[in-house]
Image (spheres, helix red, strand yellow):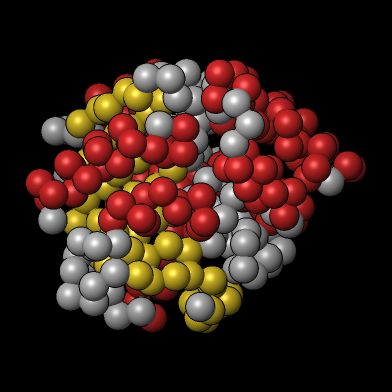
Length: 263
């Protein structure tokens, strides 16, 4: 479905019992909301599940960039308003987890709880040249040039070694990401600097990270955990950046246990 919110057309899907608590899912850079398929299958019998494509991705508009995380949080806020959703649990992975942190700081009354997955609260200055290289590569050679290096960061070698249908699905999502959207969101991520503000988040918070995540490592999740009082940290074995896919079962168990306690 498509709706107009915050000046753009946003592609979204809403599933599950209408009277159930809402769980909103926010995807990573260079994917779309279908990356959450394993979680929707586990959630939709007990929860009203909202997932959407972030600006510049999937079926959502690709406006001129650069974007900001604050702008992307406003997209979520506007979408919830249009759909008549007063409060929601919010689960975001990677870029989605960054949007979640901004939303929790700016509009905590919209949220019941947070699940922050394989994400960070700050991009160190020494990482910025790496982001510039990826942007330049996308500009000059297109998204196909980023596929294999991204897969190497997102999944462990042992997971990639076994050919699975999900591998090609993820490759397809990366290739399909509009270059303009990828660059706009990359610029938003490069401005991330929230660590010192996170102590202001008082929502129930679960932090999930793959033990072998190279891009947003365990140390980044530990930094978030230390700042958000009362938060819980789960480290998933044999998982890299997209831990919701690589360790679907353990990820779902952690998320469902947390939601049951706060729903």
